[in-house]
Length: 211
Image 1 (spheres, rainbow, N blue to C red):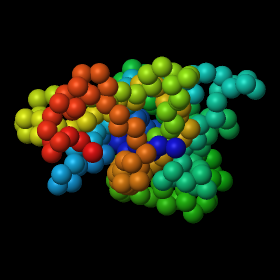
Image 2: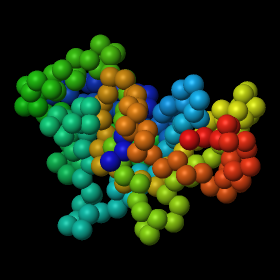
Image 3: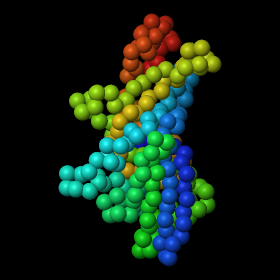
Image 4: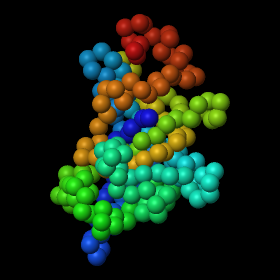
């Protein structure tokens, strides 16, 4: 499963011993996965509008919506809410995936929920990170594309590659203290360029090609 890391908005409203947590995951927001180091190509990623629509909007085989969780730090051992339990409501718009999580009073007694609420209210957790899979090409012809960034001031020497995810299977959203990509996550991405990008890279001197 791939993980993202994007700044989003978070808001907590305390309600009768429980809480309501609202947030958003912005579409078309470009995240830097890697600066390329001293010799490589910078790598960036963005999620296209409605990319998560399939699991957000399509009913499950048993009726009702497919289950999606709200977690702390991509840890299924630290749940906050879920669609199937009715405690997580998702609203998918062209600008962002909005969510409202209802945290029951009993959940507020658990250590991971108390800690999560504390860091959010202190302004230390401001990232929304999706956990998703890209569907195989037998199911979706072009779930993702990779292109070169335009108007790069380095005149193409280390022009960034931008991976756009057009369709993805969303399994969870996580509250994270810092929306970052460890190197292992960067390596999981498919960085195969397409079309004219391939032609430009192939015809460059070997020293200027991405790797």
